[in-house]
Amino acid sequence: MKKVLSIALVLVMVLAVFAGCGAKDTAPAGGKTIYVTGPTPDHGWTAQAGAYAEKKVAEINAAGKYKAVYMPASTGEEQVDLVQTIIANGDAAGVVFFALEDSAKAGQEALIAQNIPFISFDRIIEGPDKYAILNASGDNWQCGAGIAYWLQQKGMVPGDTMITLIGDNGTVCSRRQEGFEQFLKGELEYYDEHTKQTYKTDKVWTQEEIDALCADYKVVCNWSADGAYDYLEQKLADITAAAKANNGKLFIFSQDDEMTFGVLRLLEGNALDAATKADLEAMEVYISAIGGMQELYDVMAGKEGTQAPVAAQYFDDMMSVFFSPKMMTNVIGYMEDYLAGNWDYEIGAGKYEVVWIVDKNNVSEYEGFTGHAE
Image 1 (cartoon, rainbow, N blue to C red):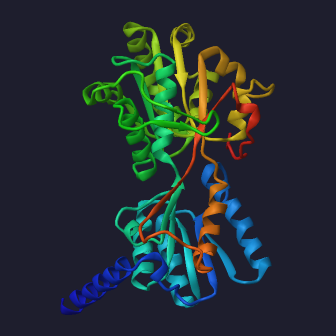
Image 2: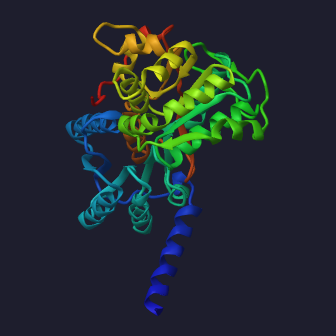
Image 3: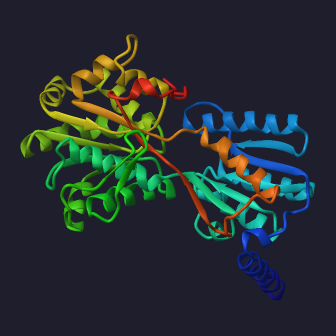
């Protein structure tokens, strides 16, 4: 027991020293290798982030100043094991840590204990975030605010019927939900990079009105089209009936492109009864997304060979907030900046890349990423 307490005390002291240093005062670990942890490339947003990371790692190796290694994993637990390998190698200059799950927290804590600088990317895990040299992601609060603004412009008012499709219970989606609610309450404005304009709510909602909007129909989809499909296959008939009895409007707050594809696939198939489909077609239906998959852009642009006819039949309009996985390239570049001494961030600071609404009006101006899995 005394040994456990001694180890815990040492860790606390290390964390306190690390936290007390400004970013410019924190010495790199002394090695010459930049390690990057992230997803195993297969499909979707995370896989594309991994593909961009692999490309950036190759560029660093070609430049020759640092060695760079990309370490893919499929789970947070695997990432914890990879950190043990990094520590054992003893050559880390810094780590760019794209945590796949909150279970990767122990890996970040191990880096802190070894005084190895790390940047936390995308999924920001509370606790270790206070000791990261930077917490970097797209601006998830603005994702939520942008969707709230867009749905409000489509007529969403208190008392309406809304479905919320959630990626997972981590900080990405919790911040998207916070931004959505803060915009409606008038606490947060939405800045649109495309229009260069800032927008505020045209009606301030109460928390009770927001709670009622979000209460009944929500599900965690684990970032998958199948998750959205399975939930709505069981629930959409009842939801449609409720919306029809209310005011004939349905709003879908989908927090990821893949989940929006799940809705499209359900509407395209034969799992729903004809009466439900007819009611949906007659109603006003608006759906969001976040990401920027080229496949979804093609749907919004009405391209042949896509699910554009399905979208046109059942949705009055759709959008996707631009949230490119290419930002992982920038994040690895931040580690290069840190190691070069080109650094003004304090320990635990956040850096959030700008996001904006892409819809049928501006979709032709943006290139998405490929990666949707049918």
